[in-house]
Length: 554
Image 1 (tube, helix red, strand yellow):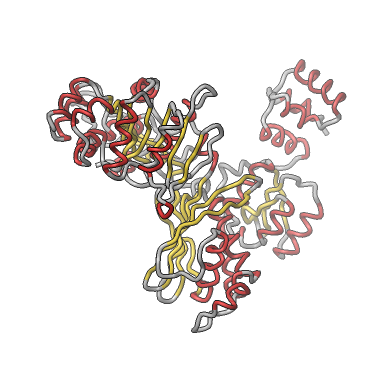
Image 2: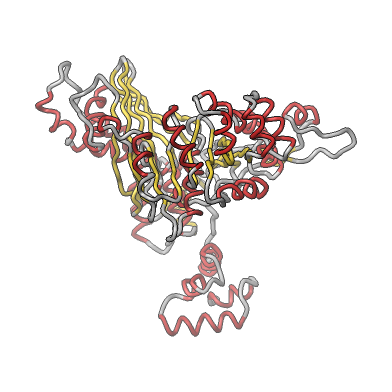
């Protein structure tokens, strides 16, 4: 049998000098040669594992690229696969092909043979790829279905005295935990539990689109809802009015916060859980897909010591994430940043965050009046909802503070007219407002399966991308679907931006109470790229598809 070092040199992956260095390091620390090569940055895990497979005469499988046979997956329970870091991927001549991170583990092979009742052909894969494949394919759905059969049916009458026993029932607790875990694994932004006449529908919002995950028996409804209410510190006896709460869970060693909202419907209370990934709060504007031309225009505004910056768009367009990304850039020890939010979605280190409380009288306006006496440099307002909040925000911007906030409008020019409609004097709008950033979220094409094609000249023209006769039609990408993206063709989202700096010309238009169409025309003439133009630029760059841009931008 050839030595691992010989194989790696023969494949041209390392040089003799690199091998000598790695062997010297190995003698000092005692780790395997493969681990040393990875730690030194000479090779990737996949390269080492592939070489080891060659050494022992076994096949190597790249699970990120491979298409797994669904029938093979059903042959072995998920618990067995996770225990041995192995996953069945295909059938071959009546035998079961199993990808393993440790194919020499005879106990694992015996367990899988017993569970499947089939002869096992082990192949080699990296531990990272096996774990990712297990997370993708061995969903909790089967376990959830099993649990629903273990939950006792509801009685016709509600007995509040026994509710504690119901919600602490082991199947109920496990069902809720699995549901949240599955939502986090599937990269869902929201989990919907919707009671219907005969069952409970569970849907996940993934990359902005709702997907039905399962339908559970009606019998689980009251127990699951009560369990979630207790976890989120809500009143379980109140079912007639909407409630809000918050809970925290641990997933793969990371803390994840969930914002929980209930809504009474004719068939019972609907629950929506917004999953708040704290890593999102640490994103940079570049991570959100902000192109350099838009970043330069936007950064020129938030680099000023005072003025008001608005991020606008519909609900769920990533406005808060963009504001947090901006605050991360501005957050320095010499700066006092105070935020007023409803609710506080992400906790930011070094930032003073205030949660509004309407019942206690702590509204946006009341909080703003107070924090201006707390010597802030930068003020973040979660949302401008009324005239009073808008008035104080404008006054703050005019008195030497940098004010960041959000507003619900369809595009950047409409924000100017919207503030005037809220009762702010036009000359104050022009003087205080420094920049408006409009935003939408489009799904990213899956990098593993996206496919190039050449659209027709007419299709591009209809989309707003004029290609003159005689000019070459560019190649763009379209979604295909693979195991990595759950057959959707998309994975993750990218922001589309429209940045409108408030210049002297636009300030004059605001004072004249000009319509948003006139402001938009002026903005385009001064270099503003519209949401659609930014989206089409990302289509040409292969980031998203033409259909996706047309779906989210008019």
